[in-house]
Image (cartoon, rainbow over all chains, first blue to last red):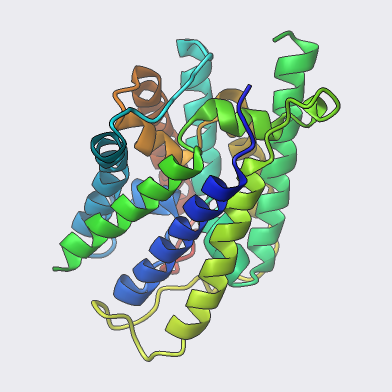
Length: 142
Length: 151
């Protein structure tokens, strides 16, 4: 059970938007985490690898900043076991790159560019994820 | 300077994920669980996160993309691919399955690592392996050729 948090969601969402706009303004890049993450690894086709590592380090550092300012750790409640986590990671990683983006690249940046491809991608991964959650929580068991 | 900017932008993006609660897989799964609507257990937060992010980005991009070039690069890197092909459906279908299984997607998974979550670390290692495999396969098929083709 988690509470609906409309204000925090809108503020956090706006921060994602500002970060995405800043990345376009500074580096001319889409703030798509899967695209950024996979290009930390070879083959290196451009010279932006250090910048991608810096961005990902920023993502990892964020909860530390939050912990310092808020005096508490942000919750990360995981009920999945190791086998599910590894399977989920492989699928999410493969699918994100195969489909040219994930929730950030397609969901925030692509939709903002009114990209039809991104709209198709967002609808597809939303529907699949909703079906998987339904099967996992209500058919197989909680 | 460009590197510090990238780090700070990542920090802002990650902070947005933390503040919106998206770095918590439980909250993400509670959004995806539409069957919980009748019982009042559904958490619509994610929809507002995505809407808030997209509106701000839509408006900001309008301003930024009028400029000739970004601050630290010679050009904007935007996908030139427009057609609806098989990978734009197959990829997100596979991605959605992984997302729905554990409630982690790439951004929040990296952010969750910062809290010391061993679950997040496990997920990210597998995720990176899956990502690299997909990219190598796509490059072999000469699919990801244009810069910015993959977000």
